[in-house]
Image (cartoon, rainbow, N blue to C red; front, top):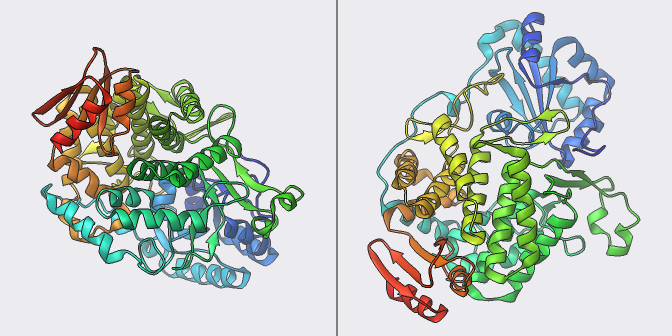
Length: 540
């Protein structure tokens, strides 16, 4: 349920909704589609509405020569992935078949008028022939190869190559938190990981209201884009919790706990977490002190409950709870899981969102992967959830897995949405869930699906950067056996197993009085937490 900020629409432009009807209208009128990709949390999107689309002369040209379509990228992630021009807003011109004519990001009134006039000339001269399909949607096979230790070695090497020794983080341009990269580095370049957690907290954390901002536009983290997304904050809860697991440093636990407070206060709907907290109506809101913010116009808020993002949140909250006995985090995770099962998961099919009478897409890869991961974590921490995880993964395998990897959704939809897209990051997430499920159930079929999925991209290993370092982590798990700890459910051994300093271990709750630690065919038993730690040390 978006608030009034999310419902804001540009004056003078009669926006159509994304769907076949809009493209049919373009065919009937023989005009291009003007596709505007926006988000509730995007400050530049709201500025473009106020400055560009509210211009009478711009609106008039659009009305006469285009079919204007407005898309909320959070509600239509597959449209986002196919038409994103490198940021939001994205301004995309399409043929009535959905092929791309040209596109850019923000345009002011004068720039928009020039592009509109130029596109009309192009359309008059060339028509449909001017459109093209992005290479990623051409249907070419993924660059398959062999799953070897070279994948992990390459990405571990990239940590050093791309690490910014002056300012922290990786890369020399805009700085994103990259929580999965931090977790990959925790086992391979711990100093880099911890230094990055420190710089993220110093520069992106809102000390007044809590929560992390999305990213910094500069290498030194000084120019911050002040949007707070559930997905970013959930992933950072897990990253800081894992930082605490490896170091015992209370700073990381406290940062994770403060971020949980943000999720369960500012984004909480009563049953789960909303999608985002966007820019404030007053541009200087985040520069104000605590008492001054109380009297200022609040930030825009999108309280839509997105399944995949809440899956991330539930997994992160359970991770923190398992390491620290944080009852508040555990209770919030349980409420999210209950909401997912009751409202957004049906016989293994995940629905992205339900908002009143509006229902999001079903069976998307990212949603299936993140929800499956949440219920795998629930099985490990709470002792229940594996059957839901199995159903969700089985549906993804049945409907999305072909040619060795996963498509991002069903092969249906308007524009280019019916074209196959195989995003490596979402494939990695599903492969990771498959590995956890294999350890939890003892069914090697899931491990083989994970291997096929990782192999589907292995031929491009040298081109993969640290932004998807999780690919190296999953490949590493396939090249050596997992650390699996079978424990009596709810016992001191169960609690101790989660404190083992390896965030990729799998904890399998069961019955009995003793724990079994296994790495491949090697096994050790333990009856006390100390014996458990000794057994782990002996096998590593």
